[in-house]
Image 1 (cartoon, one colour):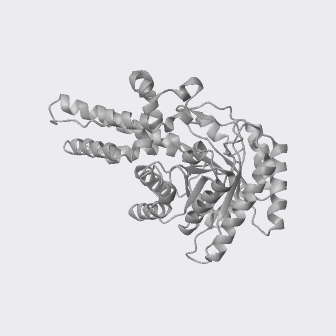
Image 2 (cartoon, one colour):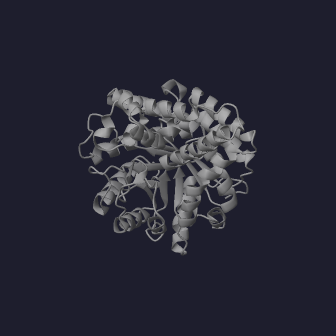
Image 3 (tube, helix red, strand yellow):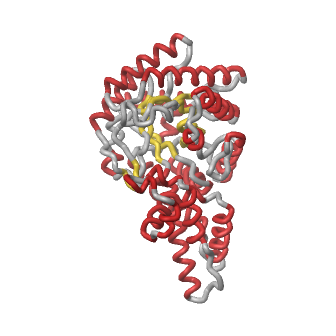
Length: 424
């Protein structure tokens, strides 16, 4: 690799697989970019701990303005890339970071799936979104055509998934080459439990069929293939049953074909499970809502401090952040995906009238409303009240987010990984 040239994500994954052969095991974290504060926390830790960052953005979070934009900071692909570059500069980060499309593909925006768009329309919009990703310099694209609204609840049809995956990957490679852009990595597969890639046999069947189709079109193999290790996030808990035997079998199977096993829904894991990830040879795990929840909890703690300042006569007027954030978060209705049972279909007004339930949903979904103008205004007031009393609210939030990040960094053996990869 030439001096100063960035190690591509494909090279990084190949490097991680080589390091496994040398006895070093590490599991990358795919970080859902829930806010600018999370970006700062991530870059500061990656700078100090010397490991590569992967920021995984879903289409709901980051997308073209013409397709509806994203709920995180109103980011489209270009502003997302620019803001991340700026935070890297602001934190003196000179290591590796990768922009990654999480769950790209047809019907991956909530409104597209809810509208039951036709295959043709959904694929067209998916390609529009991918093209914006490519032009913005994304390093990894997840090709995920599994959200077909006409097949929800049915066993995943792997042949159909492979057909659409190949079509989308071929489109992306063609557009990348037209623009003479550097190589990008791809992530494929499905985390679904209803006939997804849950067994070694089904996993290898998928890989073999995909490899044959890609080879016949002179297309690259993906860097990651997602497999189901038993993870499942609901509310603010890891409610799945992580399976070491399944994880190691899937990882070894993926490595046979030169790709890494990617795990989704790895939020809220305990130390025991995380420490077992390296002997299970998992190359990367995605974590997203946990970091949003951690930031919400930081604000809630600061709200209590602010209320105490008012009680002690140290400020005249407290912010109304709690009530505004609670109301806006519940009205997003994005919390439904993390609920269980009948709670999935609760009416917004009924939730707002139930103090216990509304508090629980705020914990889950506060981050969905961080970009709301009314919420931002109250956060500004909160910070000003704290600053008047020599409390740095922003720094507290960033450090609060670092707590679960550091747990994963240490347990997944990420410290020093960038230097190890560059030494290969």
